[in-house]
Length: 82
Image (cartoon, rainbow, N blue to C red):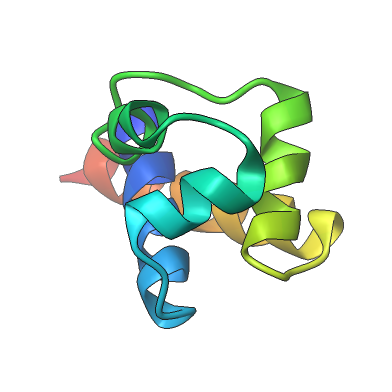
C-alpha cells in the first residue's frame, strides 16, 4: 500500500515538472523500467535513489522526502479509516 502511494506521488511530481519517465530516468541514472516499477508501486527506491530522484525532480531532498512521506502517510490513514 505505501509503495503504491509513494509511486503515485512520484508520478505526480514528475508530471508537474513536465518530465517523461525516460527523462527522469536519464537525469537520475536509473532505467526507465525502474521508474515505471516505482511509480506502479512494485519497487521502492533506496535512500540513495530517493536522493537522486529529488535531484532529478529539482526539489530538495528534505522537501521531496517530506512531500512524498506526508502524502503517503495521509493516503495510508485515509485508506485505513475507509
